Image (cartoon, rainbow over all chains, first blue to last red; front, side, top):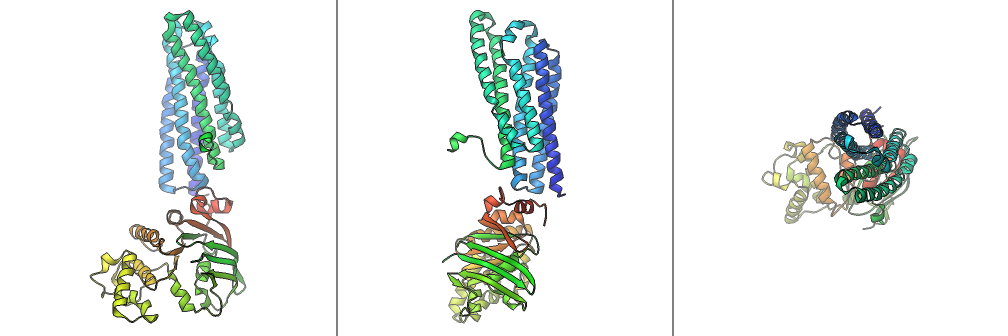
Length: 221
Length: 250
């Protein structure tokens, strides 16, 4: 086995671990949301530290592979993709942390019926599912799955637009709660962004495996 | 100048079939890197381009090599004239045990040039083109062998340039040099490309990626893939090429 292969395998394992960590954060977010439980927030925030550490470790791995092995072709694309994927995952992790912080600060102030009018739970389900697919796509180098999953981003966009309408209606009825409702809306926006970031991950996987650039397709025409 | 063209080149050393149906067209003013594991035929191919293999008793060739539209193996071709046109730089610097000046002037003299002014002028121009003039202009009468390895290799390049070739073949020209001298040779190749067509055999993948416009990957006597260097090193079409450039074999 070429020395670089062991390094690339270790990088892949680290990425898979990071995917698991972030997915776990989102699963905990759903639990916290369902129970309107601010205490889970601490756990989610402590997971964020692990995610950040993992990002730094992967950055270091990539830097060292580039410096020592000067990879080419698939190997180079994998290292380049990893740098971007780890950045995307870190940002998804940040979104999960913001949701946790919000719940922790507003748990007592949020009537459950309001929460249930938002699409946060189904959105969390979709992003969590997308990340699960990304893990499998990376592990098995399955670009078909990556492409298929990327399309789920559209479902998130739809739910996000519904949440915008919900927010407008609730603020109209309860103008004094405008600030908390707007903050709640930013959580929906974060989850919609998490979908965009997961779609980016799918595109990076396609770039790594097939050498095809999917992003900015319209601009490339 | 028309491009260099090799058509269906097959080379045999006795029963050993070392090059198989090589078809390649090399455009002028480009750098082409020949890569592949040891024994793949890249050096044999390079030597076929200026008939260096003619000296090997068991050498046999089928197919044609055209330079300037002429078959270089045609009986009318004078081999000395071909080698003037197609110069060669070897792996190990091989200056003659003469002065720096004499090394560069040597080729001119054997080609019948005797005018002192012309010789002096060509020696200076060649050393300048080889990026060596500044380092040796005050000691042209000193032995060439007193120069460092990197300087000796640039002297050999100057010696090749002096006889005004159109194509320069380089067989791992920097493999015996330190990183600084290697960088100088690479820089020089980039500059020489403006006037010459360069074909270089190298085992250094990063060097091939840095300096060449096109790369040809040879394996077991076959030309597996020939494409723009930027494609070969980012998205090669053939799995063998990818495995070789990424260090998985060879």
